Amino acid sequence: MQRRTFLGAASALAVSGCSNLAISPAAQAAGLQPLGQPHAFDYAWLKGAASNLASRPYEQHGRPLPADVASLDWDQFQSIQFKPDHALWADRKLQFQVKLFHLGLFFKRPVRMFDVTQGRAQELAYDPAMFDYGKSGLDGAKQPRDLGFAGFRVNTKLDNFKGDVAAFLGASYFRAVGTEGQYGLSARGLAVDTALARPEEFPDFTDFYFEQPDPASNTLVVYALLDSPSVAGAYRFAITPGEPLLMDIDAALYARKPIERLGIAPCTSMFQTGENDKRMANDWRPEIHDSDGLAMNSGSGEWIWRPLSNPARLSFNSFADKDPKGFGLLQRDRNFDHYQDDGVFYEKRPCLWVEPKAGWGEGAVQLVQIPTIDETFDNVVAFWNPAQKILPGKETLFGYRLYWGSQPPMRPPQAIVVATRAGVGGIVGQKRKYYSYRFAIDFAGGSLATIDWKTAEVEPVINLSSGRAEITSARPLASIKGVRVMFDVVPTDGTDPITLRVFLKNGGQSLSETWLYEWVPPALAERKPGA
Image (cartoon, rainbow, N blue to C red; front, top):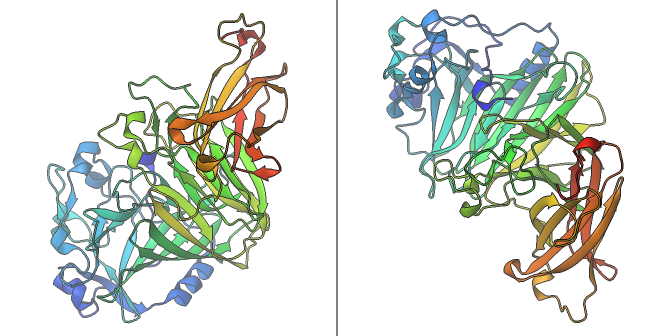
């Protein structure tokens, strides 16, 4: 899952002849050219197209790129820029513009783009007038009109936004930003067979349809056709910029064959090193991550925080649930001093929260963490895996909302975890006679800032799947107006992962969300007291 090597998507429908009368006045004014004939379009039509696609054997999309496009290197590809005056709706007094990405480098599967006006969809032709080719050496005039595009980005004229608000590029990947304007983690249309013994399948968005918005509207509607060897799908995105940015999504899925592990609303991110995991702390920066934890609000109402890590081997966790209220990968730590990166600004990376629009039934939020050696690799993915499998010949509908911004729209009413640290166990100044590992968890918020410590009976509730906990404490931490929980874990002789679960209580009342962690103890030969 290397962020710079996502595959592009390709066409699922045949290309026909040209008609200069079909394109909308807005597209004509921007200098965009039509390709083929227009056709009636709405979401029902798109679902029918996806269903029809799934009824046929899968065919590889597109065709080989022209040699000069396929051979573009990184610098050449980066020098190709879309001309702003050719953006869709550039001449209109609308809140949005759509700009297209050129094919090349890692994005080799053409994606078709359609302008939708008054219920009619018209494909847009590749036109060299759209691009400034810079130092790429590419001659756009020699490219075919049906070359296609790699993806698109959305700009808005709304207040507080100066750059992109969303971009769709590669397979079914897309990203968005809140008002801080900083890209970070990605979402996907669908995940198929992630973290199984066989290669993962990456579905493609093959066609995008842009519905011209009303001039007063602050929402852009985009439709997408998805295809892969196992499944086809129709998607509707209603994108509303803000803090957080909202994507209201409807998805209709049509399986070609049974799918062992289906991932709904996949969130993809990167974690190299952080306060809790120094395994790859070989960089001058203290922390490097797009997200620092998986947050879950279960169907029962329990709030759970699972800090992320960079494991030495692939880690897979499944959190069974029924009708979850939401989950997401968050960047809770928003302190520049903790990262010291004034180039990519990890403290501004957006959180991504998934909120089902209706009950999703039984299933599990699943978390996959893959070892990574540096920050260019996305090594974390979280998604909903429904217990009810999607079946060939059946339509399966999912509706959900994605929120992108500095804070998720929902948060626990109780205290939350604001930091997780780990290191050598034992008591400072005393000889350590056996191996142990210490965890320090900081909780803040909720009622902790106003609690009366003279009468309170605050204590940590600590549960381990194996081993034992010792030297436990929970004491006030004035710097965060919260509580620091500390304890050592003494593992058994095995090296199986140990699940740690901690929350705060005062008497019989819970004071915090639940901290959930997986720790893999070192091999016996590596367990040295004080190490």
